[in-house]
Image (cartoon, rainbow, N blue to C red; front, side):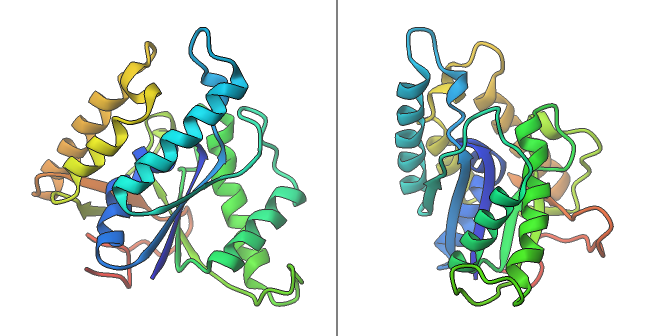
Amino acid sequence: MRLVVLGAHCGDAEIQAGAIAHKYAKAGHEVTFVHLTAGEKGNPPGVSVEDYREQKIKESEKVASILGVNTMTLDYKDAELTFNDEIITRIATLMRKLKPNVVITHWEKSIHPDHALCPRIVQAAQLKAGLPGFDLDGLPAHYYSYYHSENWEDMEEYVPDLFVDVSDEYETYLEALSHYWFIMNSKSFRYYDYYKALGTVRGCVNRTKYAQTLKFPTGTNVRKGGFIPGYEL
């Protein structure tokens, strides 16, 4: 299995599905985090946007090394994402290169415009990557499934379908998150505390110590379960 977790900013893929990613990477599957932007405009006082971009990319590389996954950050600008053919084609081409069986991304409804665009991009790229009639750098067509994961900014009407037991992975996940400056130092939101508590609450519902959740896209054939369909560990 090849798994891609696509987030709007460095940190989104990790907080939403980092423990799931680590679980599948440990089992031998190839996992890649794709960040459309670095999330550089949340720069701390005294740090330029350019310097914070470099800082966040370095942090993402450290986090990925702990979780045992690959990572990449594209060159789009934070808070300036646009839904257009250029980005759809770029992501479709990337998906043909990475060949994921499954892509995990943001939920459809969010208070952050960048987040809300991600599932639209992933869905449009799914079609373009999967149809052989599109010539994308001569790469063969590749179709993937996709799911949504849980972010505190994307919670409107988010009701989980899948609860994945990540009890054995959660401490490593939390340790990895601690290498992001914004997670440990944000004055506007207590990221670390929230995601530690969220994993605990989802685990309570799942009757496990910790869990992370996924949601099927709107309108698809929903099947409740405890693993990514077709890839039970």
